[in-house]
Structures are given as C-alpha cells and as structure tokens.
Image 1: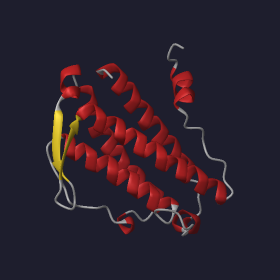
Image 2: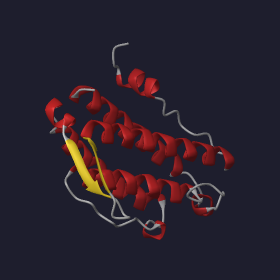
Image 3: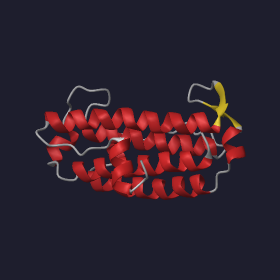
Image 4: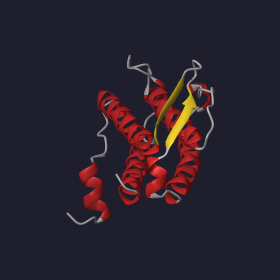
Length: 167
C-alpha cells in the first residue's frame, strides 16, 4: 500500500466516522446512553471506544505509548464526542498528509497498557486502525437499528462513488 492509497483509506475513515456521528445526533439522550448489552454497552460507549482507539494509535505513530483510556462519562453527549473527533481528525489528517512511501514501511515500536512491547510497520498499524473503526461502526449501525433508526451507508464503495473516484 502506498501513500496515496493510505490517504484515500483515511479520507474514507473520516467520511464514515462523520456519517455515523451525524446519524447519532438525532438520538434521544436516553437512547444514546442506553445499555444495549453490546461490547461497549451503548452507542456512546462504542463511539468513545473508537475515538479513544484512533487517538491511541495516532499517539503511537508519533512515538508515544500512552496508558490513558477515555472514560465514557467524559463525553456526556454526541456533541462532546463530535468535538473531540473533529480535533482528532484534524491531527490525523496532518499526520497522513506528511507521509511518504518510505515512512509507511518504517517499523514502529510501542508499549501497550500492560507494558508489553510490540512492533509493526506503520502501514499495517494504519490499516488496522481503519479496520478496527469499521468493525465498531458496524456495531453502531446495529445499535441504531435496534433503537428504531435508519443508519447511514458507510461502505467504502459508496464513499468512492460519492467522492467521484474513478471506477
């Protein structure tokens, strides 16, 4: 995967995140925090997990190994999550815009929350982040359906069509 492809992938990830955030804006407060017995309890819990993971990976790519975990209660509503995500997306975009094909091949070492050291090529970490976010966005889609809402399409091909990428 080259720089242009990873930039497209991250543009897609941002597009899909924004679509999901727009969809949850319409939820009643009690539905946003309702425990639906999923991995992260609620729509809010799932979104905070994805936000935290995207923040964590960006920190790791920049040479940090933070141990902090975002607490769901730090984000009382969708607007708080969206504000944090907007700032994070800006930082991600700056990082992605400064990549080179060579830098994507660099191996990055980090220490996880348990103190274990791991190392992977940057490009694989970046692919992992988008895959992780896609997985959990799919959970939010299911939660929205359970709450009686119609979720947005977040398929990669829908993004490509809407963004006018050649097929």
